[in-house]
Length: 175
Image (cartoon, rainbow, N blue to C red):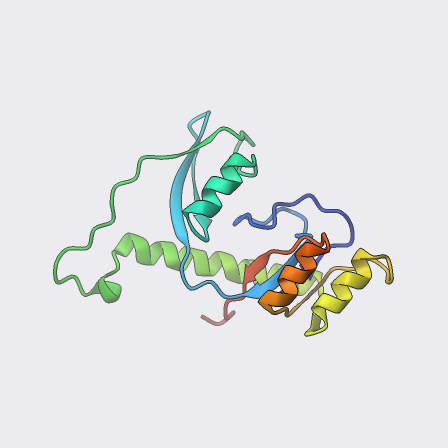
């Protein structure tokens, strides 16, 4: 699903934790796998982060887009983590450790909350999302919070036009 805020939001569209306000623009995407890191700030506050891949983490860190949710510090590092090695013959969750399964459950819960927030605070424009996002961006319609669908090609075109686009994993609210 995509989402457009009514004015120049400086939110990081790749951030896993949504800001208090809505993202500038986001597009429908489904992520089947995300990488989880335990993070620590310069004041030793520990928190977790979920990223599309390690390159996304590195890019966000280099751009100063990561901050501690407790104190706001931008001095972030990966915390030391124990490796998650499944024992031979472990059939629990298809070989997934209990910690990994819990992490996936927490991520699904968080993504359901994101979906509810978007649905309550924006209008669904369906497949007209790219067209409506452009109208708002170019001042052809009043600013409004919208969300809808866009293909990967439409996402690239929006980005090329300077319209900030990000993916929101659109999870089933019942699962």
